[in-house]
Image 1 (spheres, rainbow, N blue to C red):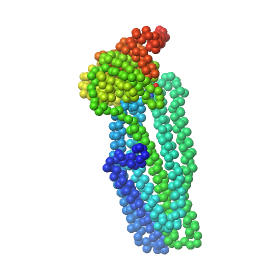
Image 2 (cartoon, rainbow, N blue to C red):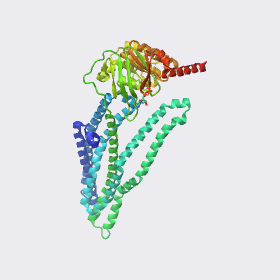
Image 3 (cartoon, rainbow, N blue to C red):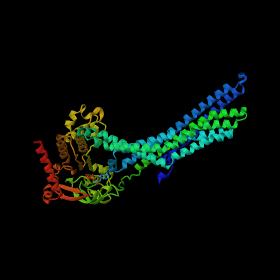
Length: 591
Ligand code: ADP
C-alpha cells in the first residue's frame, strides 16, 4: 500500500517537521531561478542602448547602472539559491538519518536466519545506498528540479512578452524536446532502471566471489569453471547496456536535436519576419531572443536529468521497502523463564519458501538437560535448519519447540540468547582486538576471564603468534586468522557466555589436521555439563554422543547411540562404512 504513494510523500514520512525545510528549499530555488533571469534583461538593455546611440556613444549613460544591476541580481539569485540548498540539506540529512535508524531498528528485530541467509554485505548495501540516494535527491536534485520548472515558466513569460510570434516559434522545438523526453522517462524506463541495478549488483557480487575464489582457482587451476559465473554476469550486463543504449538512441537524438534547434527556429523567424524591413524594435527583440534561448536549451537538459535522479531514488526506496517488509519475529507478550536446558520438539514443520518442499517435515525429538546430541545425514537433510529453529533464528510454521518446558516464542529474545550459544561454521570475527571480540560473549567480563576463556578454548597458541597478543586487531595490517582459528576464538566467546545450551556447527573443512584436533578439544572442553547439539559433517566426532539423529529429507530417519544405529544396518551404518573406507583410503594412501 505504501508503495503507491509518490516518492516525495514517502520521503516526507521520514522528515517529520523538517519537511517544511524541503518545501522552503523548493520555493527559494524557484525564486532564485526567476531572479537569475533578470540579469539577461539588463544585458539586453545594455545592448539596446548601445544600438540606440550607435551614432554617438557619449549618450550611453545607463550602461554602468545596468551592468551593476545585472551583477546585483546575479548575486541575489546566488544567495537565495544557497539559502535553498541549506534548507534542502537540513531536511535531507534528517531524512537520511531517520531512514537509517528505521532500517537498522528493523534489521535488529529480523530473524537471525534471514540475516544469515542474506549476508551482511547485502543488507549493509541496502541500508547505506538507499539512504544515500535519497540524500542526494532531497539535497540537490529537488531544488534543481524546482529551478528547472521555474526557469522555463519565467522564460516562456519573457518570450511571449517581448514578441509573442517569435516566442511561439521558439517554443515549437522546446515542446518537441519535452515530448521526446517523456518517451524516455515512462514506466518502461523505470523497469529498465531496476534491471540495470540488478545486473550491476549481480556483477559486483560475482566479482567479489571471483576475487575471494582466486586462491582456490590458483591452487586447483579451475580457470574456465571459475570464470564462468563472473563472465555470465558481465555478459548479461553488457547485453542489457547495449539493448538499452540502442533503444534510447532515437529518442535521445530527437531530444538533443530539438533542444538545440531553438536557435535554428530563431534564425528562421528572423528571415520570415524581417524579409522587407528591419525596424529597430524588431532588432531589439531578436537580440533579446539570441541572448535568452540558449538558457532554454540548458534548462531542458536539466529537466531531463532531474527525471533520472527521481527514478534512481524510486528504485532505492523499493529496495528499502523490500527490507522493511520482512516480518520481524514476534516478541513474547508475557515472557516466561525456561525451567531447565531440556529441549522438546513436537512435530515441527518449516519451509524457507512456500512454493518449495518443507526443509523440516514433521520432526519430534526430546533432548534431556545435559544430553549430547549429534545431527548427521546427507547435505541438505535439514541439520542446520533444525538447529537454527531451536535457537529461534526462524519461527516454525507448524508444531512447537520448547526449552525448559516453555515455547521458544514465549521466551524473551534476550533470555533465549542467554540460554543458547551458537558457534557458527564460518565464525565471524569483527575488526576489533581479540580481547574485545571474545568479550562480546559477556560484556562485563574482566581481562583475566577473557584470557581464561581463550585458554580453555585452546586458543593460546594463536595468541602467542600474534604481535600484540590479545590486543592484536583482527583484520588490521594483514592480521588474519584461519577458519579453524576463528572458530576456536568464537568458542572462547561461548566459554565466556557460558549458556546452558550449546549448538555447534562443525566446520566442514580444515586447513590442517592440528587445527581440527584443537577445535575438537575446545568443543569437548566447552561441552561439559551442557546440553549440546552438534551439527556434525564428519562422523569421527559423533561416536560418543548420547544420541545421534540422522536427518534426511527434513525428517529424522534414524536415531540412537552409535552402536545401536550400526546394528540397525540403515542409513547410519551405511554412512559409517563409507566413512571408514575413506579413512582407510587416506591412511593407505599416506602409508
Ligand atoms: P544440512 O544442514 O543438512 O546440509 P540445511 O538445513 O542447510 O541442510 O538445508 C535443508 C534444506 O533447506 C535444503 O533443501 C536447503 O536447500 C534448504 N535451505 C537451507 N537454507 C536455506 C535458505 N537460507 N533459503 C532457502 N532454502 C534453504
